[in-house]
Length: 125
Image (cartoon, rainbow, N blue to C red):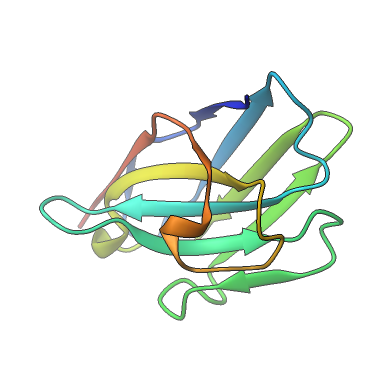
């Protein structure tokens, strides 16, 4: 089993930055793909970014490309999401997730086996 805890969310003005962290416990996630998803109010959960187990490959949703950066520290069993130039439409609950099965950079939430509880990000205009 893998337990995931997100942190770093909060309220920020448009144009600002936030850094989210995902801490894993229970099992090392160093060999797994890790993704970030978000769920805006009243909408479906959507893909944001994913990173390979080495950190050498990343994949971003078009809506965040160039503004968000995903990274990982396997020694600390953590994955981060650096968000800049935030927009009100980035407001959502952000979740990290682990793919312990497929090993690919997938935007499909069904490909991920473990999920955190989420952290709220609110961007004011």
